[in-house]
Length: 312
Image (cartoon, rainbow, N blue to C red):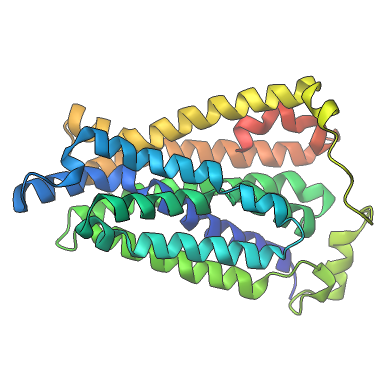
C-alpha cells in the first residue's frame, strides 16, 4: 500500500485522541450530572459536594502522574502492546463510569484514576510512532499531528457532550460512545502497527526504504546522562514551558464548561460548542508550526526546546 505511514499516523492519532477524550470528559459531563441527580435523587449524591468534585479531578491527575512509571521498565515492550493495554484500560474505565457513578464515590474515583493513568501514555506513544514511522523530513509533521490529539479530543468531546447531555440519552451516553470509539480505534491501531517497518505486511518495499533511509542503527540502549540533563539550559527551558502549558491547558479543559455554563449562563448545548472553539485555533497553529519546522534546515531536535509548548 502506497503511503501507508500516513495510515499509521491517522490510526495512532485517533487512538490517542479518544484516550485523551476519556480523561477530560468528566470536566464537561459534571455540569449535567449534578443537576440530573439533585433533581431526581436524594441530596446526598456525592457530586453535590464541591470537595468531592475536586477529588474527582485530583484522582485523574494522580493517575496521570503514576501512568508513566510502568513505561520506564517497558521501553523494550512492543508499542502495539503498550497502546493496546493502555487503550483497553481507558476504554473500560470510561464504559464503566456511569455504573461507578451510580454505585458511589469510591468506584467513581477509581474510574477517573484509570482514565488519567491511561492518558499518560500519550507522549511515549507519540515518540515511538514518530521515531519509527516518520521519514526524517516528516518528523515534525508526525509529532505535531500526533500531539493534536490533545486538541482534537476536547473538540470532539465538548461538542458530543453538549449534544448528548441536551438529548434524551443523557450524560451517560457520552461515556458509552467515547469508550466504544476508544476500543475500536485502539484495536485498529494494534492491527496495523508493527515495530519494524520492513516487517509490516501493508508497507511496500519502496516506502520502507524511504522511511528508514538515512537512519542510524542503535545497537544498545545508552545510559541516561543525568548530569548533562540536569545542567542543560534547553532541558530546563522545555520543562518550564511544559509545566506552564499543561497547567493552562488542564485548567481550561477541565473547568471551562463549568465557567461557561454556571457563570456565563449558556445552555449545556451552547457550552459544548463554545468550549470547543479554542481547540480549533490550537489545531491549526500546531499543524502549521509542525509543517514550518519540517521545511527548516535546522535539525528537529535543536528546535524542539523553542517550539515544544506549541507542538504539545
